[in-house]
Length: 304
Figure 1 (cartoon, one colour):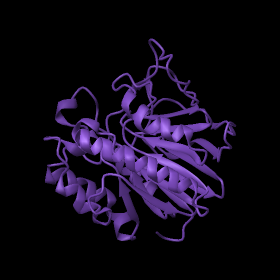
Figure 2 (tube, one colour):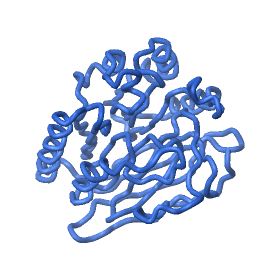
Figure 3 (cartoon, rainbow, N blue to C red):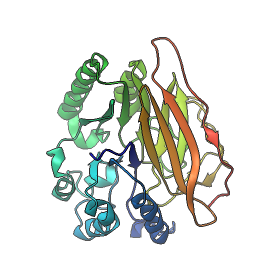
Figure 4 (cartoon, rainbow, N blue to C red):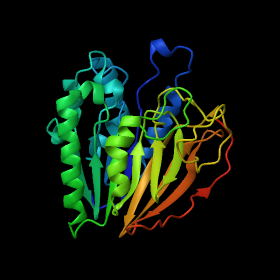
């Protein structure tokens, strides 16, 4: 990675498909979002899944390559986990995905070390993985968290996977298995401070047990209505203030690691047509049995 102090996290960059004709596409807005992303001084880019609509289709990857071209030309390191679209149409991993991220060596779960932060990437497509790989990944995660906990060079741990344990999306629901297999181990890990997910197309921010859960599935897919209707009592409230039952905005996150804390700057495409900061979150390393969190700063916006 470059010496820059910032890392970007984005998710769900797939284009609105023909089967999703009831939703508008966001091609122009997505190009603007990626233009803003290209202007940032970044060390790398982490993608939380659904890179393209159909992983087996060459034309979808060509479109993604065009969006990424300024970042690729600058030599930006890219890391990605697979979303459900990245297994389509045959529930098998596409070689085209591996071609875009060859340094991952076809790994479906891995850790990236950056400025004292351990970024643990996981695959939450459990049905596509099958029992054997699900068990292998769970065992790896337990061993990895134990090793990172005792690694003095690691100050904080961040989780990244596709399916969110918490979401108020009215199109997709929270993943119970992701919460059980990934969320519980992260919640018990004192160095873990934040988790980033996609799948729900928008932006959400939850806090549970002092751990920040951020949904950043706003990379270009069809925006979903979030909230409204019957509330989910099994999850914490969304910390981000936004009209319930409306669509949110295209977005990505900028991460700055500063010792035992991470500053998250959420940049979103707003109603005035610009990309600007829509939320800020500061997460601190937790002590066992304690919760040390800062409320996120609010920026009043109008729905896009």
